[in-house]
Length: 217
Image 1 (cartoon, one colour):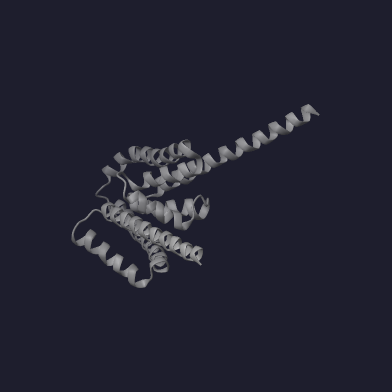
Image 2: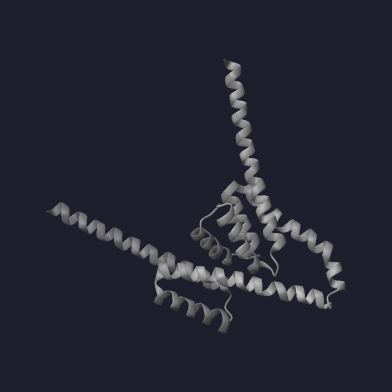
């Protein structure tokens, strides 16, 4: 009987270990794909990371992904690696963050080192120029599609008037005044924190007043 329980315990341990390794494998494969196929830098990889994290593996919800994107914009460094670190940490802690960052960076780094000399030698070739021009509209469409979904979430959460107001303010400060997007996002986050704290304090005060009235009756 004891040997049977020992065997069952070993089997369950093997299954748990396989599940853990499978999650690390999914992190590695998912973020390796985003690193290799993310032509054009950080912004172009955002829709790819969203597909892997939200739709394919369901590590985070669409709402949480929007929050991660906003927070990543307020921190220094490349946005794709910051998002990889956050999602990897959420899924598998510190080791998951390291796996996500390394698998996102290393494949593209190796490919860049290996192909850089070849591409540089053909930098004036119309074929290479056509490849770049062909990829650009795809990246633009992916970013536009993601922006539309963010506008829809903003409309549902804030209403049309506030969403348009904040969009115009963002456009003026970033494009006309040259303010860094991270500073603007940080200002919005701090403002939202104080507004939420004030509302919570007002609700708590109102609740105390109502309780006093009930006790006096």
